[in-house]
Length: 242
Image 1 (spheres, rainbow, N blue to C red):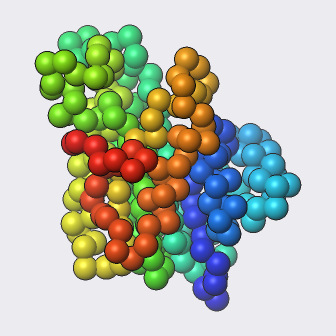
Image 2 (image 1 turned 90 degrees about the horizontal axis):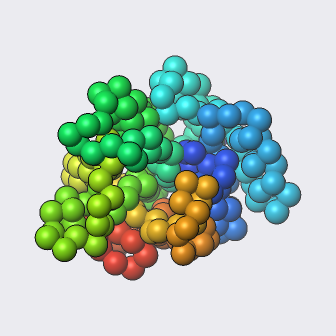
């Protein structure tokens, strides 16, 4: 049986922006599948949402371990028969102290495995389920730091924030967004990249935006109407340069 409720999977969602995306989608009536690499933390997070009246489920998902992707796909197919929204939120940065001329290759490979290769693998596996939805949405959580246009400006607003592995993995993710949107242009599925903004999180304690504000762009792209955009890069109501 195919679920009549809209179903959303959010990766990297046991805390921070991912958790808040689950909460906001849940408050809109979605069944939310909260994924995390740590089962204990993920279950606690899902239980918290259930306590708030949200239909939340937990699945273990480590973006660096593709062996776990197929069980998640099978769970979604068996339990719901479709997937309406995929929010590729999971990601990490481990090379802040390095630039392109010094970053070790192992850090580049590890960053791309989690932020790019694993994401593509998971998305491709889940795509048949997303195509069963009447309004499938794929949201790739990118970053303004992935914008080549902004980095190349002489007076770049990004300043000297140049961790090459992280930034370039988000640039590559944006390329995936553009190409996947084009491949799916004759379907109802919409694919977009989002920039949450400078959000106050564990990794960025000095930022000014709240987590609630940081989740808004992804939630907006996850709930686009049929005439909404696809193949774009957005922050709140603004289109960002590639």
